Length: 365
Figure 1 (tube, rainbow, N blue to C red):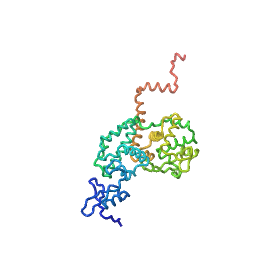
Figure 2 (cartoon, rainbow, N blue to C red):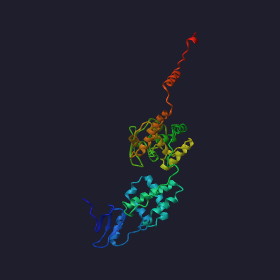
Figure 3 (spheres, rainbow, N blue to C red):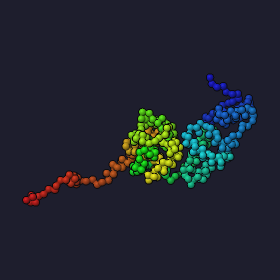
């Protein structure tokens, strides 16, 4: 049976189609409940509304930026973010609350958002992370949160970073060989390299990979970033590397103390290994190298999507187009050569076959 609704609690839908809850006794005033439905804060607000008193102020003054961010953290939109994304944005929101938490939400205009981005412009990626965090927050506030009419981040552009055109450096075959020569099979550095290259996993998934994810020679893992499941075989070079290396109980990759890596510390550790091998690459660059190698060997978009856990074909199409462009350019380059006549072709063939030039009767006599 459906749960019986408490007295004087009413539910409506906003003009955006969002459920709105309020308390109203008989013909008295309507008291809006702002907290997420059925949360502890919601029922505190409900009891306060019945008693005719203001609810306890938690998370800042109602209507303020810090008050709204507190409610965003309790929302399903926040819970749906990947743990790594929440950690990153939590740090950003902590700084935002310190500098502008007391400001009213209605005072956060596009001009304010641009000013926040510009204060961070010396570090474009930090500025862009700030903007992405605020976009996500105001998407919720203008939608399910029903706290503002419009998202002030709309129309505010990301800054161009130093490596935006190419992104992370993609390892080339010479760099792959150099790393392998510097870190032989059996070292932790080589195992990390082999996992990244021969699975295509991101570093956050690579550090979690362990024997519990392997059955009948297949790795099955739900990726951290997109939640997409991937199933892939353990290729022979990776199997050899796992067998030759001391691994952990729950993860293949472990620190010197035998503990599982944290994603961020793993990235720093692996970059040091790259520097020692005189390679400019990084962990993510190996993922790109794997995608490039697979595409150049003829992998289709759907195969790349299955292998790398992409939910759309955007990235897969990029790699297949690049590989096809490279093949077409190689073939087309032959067309730049001057076309030889039939006589020239015959002479070329004779020289290459080692034919002796004809001699006259006089010279033979």
